[in-house]
Length: 159
Image (cartoon, rainbow, N blue to C red; front, side, top):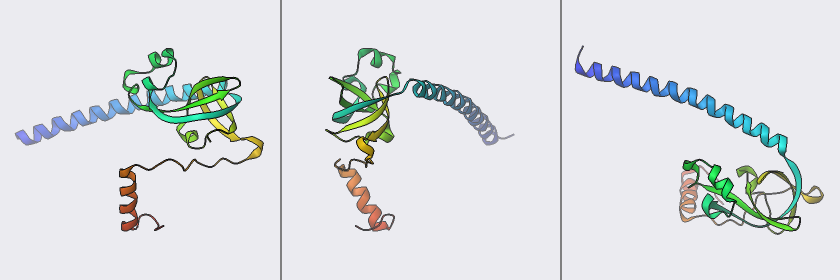
C-alpha cells in the first residue's frame, strides 16, 4: 500500500470513531434532556406575573442566586440567557424564560405563566387575550444588512 492510502485509511478510521462517539453521546444527552423536561412538567405551577424588565444577559450578570450559577456547567456560564425581572405577588424575582416564550412576554402587563422553580415555561394572556411577539426589539446593524441582502436576492418579500 502507498503512503497516501494508509493516511486516508487512518483518517477514515478516526472519523468513524468520532461519529460513533458523537452518536452515543447525543443519545445520552437526549435522555438527560427528556428526564429534565419530565421533572419540569411535574413541578410546574400557574402564577400571575408582571414583567418589569426582560433582557438577554450573561449568567453571571443576570442577578440569579449563586446556587443556580454554581450548578451550571462551566461552558454554559458565558452564554446569554433570557432573564425576566418580574413581580410575582408582592416580590420581585429574576426568572429565566424559555426561548420560545421570551418574545411573547409583555412588559408592564400581567400574564398567567406556568413556572417551574425560576424557569418560565409557558405564558398566556389575562382574560383570554392572545399574546403576540414583542416587536419593539431593535435590530442589530448586522441583522439589518442581512435583511437588505436577502430582499435584493429575492429570499424575502420586499417591504
